[in-house]
Length: 213
Image (cartoon, rainbow, N blue to C red; front, side, top):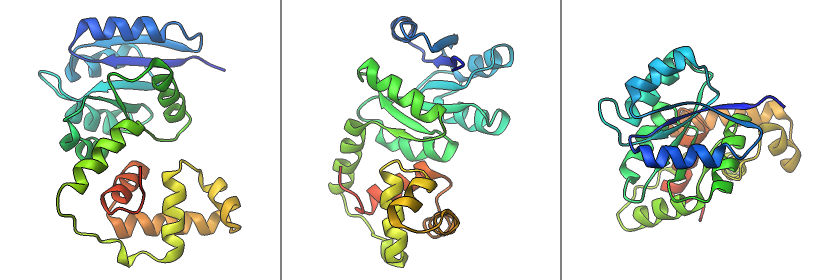
């Protein structure tokens, strides 16, 4: 297996240094760049191509939201995992819209960071369970307009499977339907919910209380 090339974008050098040391303990990881803001990141990636960026949300000069959006447009093969702290829930939807594929808390165990990197590298999404708990707790504390009534029973079933992290092939096998049917339902889900990607669908399901964390 080729090494997964990683870039770290965070304005706290001590945090970056610690994370770099921990990631360096894995033989299949290669930390190729570490920067303190989005501008530095975009310049660094021109000379040191990477597969995964661990992106802080709050950074000077260019924050994680803007950097993720530019990266998604300019280098779409690079996948972004947001580094988050409690209290930054307001940024999650903006990061998803910008193209982030995963979210992990800064105080996560290194084993969870590894799981997130591998999952996103393989084309999936990753959401810290602790982070999702805080998102849904925040949502439950305010009035929400549930817009899930337009989804069919089958679409809801598929949405729940998506939230479980299953691929279209795996969903097809679990529900005893063809992958083409799953592809069609997923496209309908994106259109009906106004979601841009799988991460957006997961947040939609949380917001509309279709799943419990």
